Image (cartoon, rainbow, N blue to C red; front, top):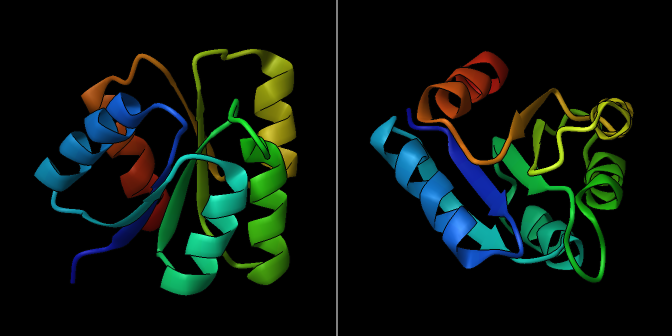
Length: 120
């Protein structure tokens, strides 16, 4: 059975790139959101197997969204992504509940590897 993924990034082209990589790898993209507030709404509505969150977004950043999603479902699987691979961001993401961290620009093998590691 194909795993369902929710993509959250304020840049539509980033969501498109991720979607392309993941669909080719056999995953199902069940929803997209452009900020943390919509990410939480979509998570409640769709119950994805995995949520991939960008860190830097308007309205609510990915770290706050991760905390919000974890408050709804403590078992929720989350991967964070950001162009800024700063150590503090990675640590904060993990503390917020993320299982892995992908740095932009996306490398196809790294994205697939992270997703396989987290949800198989």
